[in-house]
Amino acid sequence: MRTTINLICVYLSLLAAAPFYSCKKFIEVSPPVNQLNANNVFTDDKTATAAIIGIYSDMEFSSPISTYLTLLQGLSADELTSTSSDKGFFDFVTNTYLPNNRYSAIVWDIYSNVYEANSCIQGIQNSNGLSPGTKSQLLGEARFSRAFCYFYLVNLFGDVPLVTSTDYRVNDTLRRTASPLVYIQIITDLVIAQSLLSPGYPTDQRVRPNRWTSASLLARVYLYTKKWADAELQASSIINSGLYTLSGLDSVFLNNSNETIWQLMPVSPNFNTQEAALFIPSSTTEIPAYPLTDDLFNAFEPGDNRIQAWTGSTAIGGQLYYYPAKYKIIGGSPLSEYHIVFRLAEIYLIRAEARMQQGNTMGAIEDLNIIRSRARLPPLLPTLPPDRIAVAIQQERRIELFAEFGHRWLDLKRTNTIDLVIGALKPAYWQPSHALWPVPQDQRSADPFLSQNAGY
Image 1: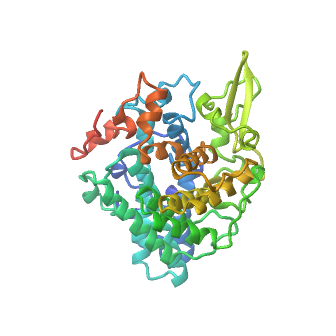
Image 2 (image 1 turned 90 degrees about the horizontal axis):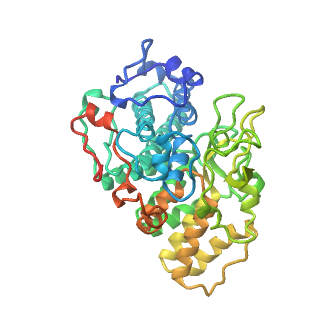
């Protein structure tokens, strides 16, 4: 790759790009034929903003972020199963994916979004034509975007190449970087992004990150790295910002929900979300492609209103199938559902766990009861012992965040319960080494310095 961006090819061609494309090693992708020098792209506020918006359009339309992060992690965990004949998907149901699985290769292509972010960071930093406010906002968004991509890469694949340059001569022979060092880069990017981003949104809808978006990912990262006080501080700053409130269950996933912290706007004018297309059957006679597992459905407490609000069901051939129905609309205009990436409920659950880990059991229970109250569940008692609170937190995370960006898969890994849970659910298949997905074989063939995860 070169440090060039073709506005036409990179941004407008997203409208025509197929969402299920083959994955190439991102450092080997050839530059567009009709190029504009990066210095020209970032000469004014308008073109520089278009470059940043192009990252989000790519994430929503042609990147694995909008489609596969939810689906593949849900299949890998205990959330979803597959009725598809595609063996590539079924390998995630059984956790028997191999380095030649094309879907893990597609997820690796999140690196294409990393490259876009790196290009924007470099171009914005070197530009002398941007207004100070725009330059600060756009650089913060680019830093956030890179951290967001690396959060999933490091959690799904473990040690990964840490690419912060657009120089193909540097990127072509990168080795994997130890996960703690990748996390340091993620935190560095997010802290810088917070200092640059405005507290308000640069657009009417919440489709571009603001300061609280960066704080949301930072709170999550601190939770994952067991920095409990920092996680609580970030979560509290969002909750106390006054910008967000929990929505009713029926309106959480609408594009005007006040619970949303950041969402991706659909690119097609007549297509809402990939989730609705993936999970909602097209007719009453169609078997859902990715129904909920019995294990997940049976985990809902009696009387939990999230069953009616966020799941659907259909009976085919005498068998009842339940499926995710958080997003309900596929086509139609105007669009009413956007792809929600961060929302306030997760922030309450992050703070509950951070508080519990610091011995503030009352605070943890208060946050959990806010989430339970919306679901019309009885409150947890203040006398609940700490070990029961810990179980209650993971239960609420499992139910509240199911079929959203793979929270369950990542929670099982970070809490060291994955062998117990998935091992019991899939005893004939589960191997502890498969908690990390394989590095795609074509990537290793292209880069002799790229090592494989253990067990593959």
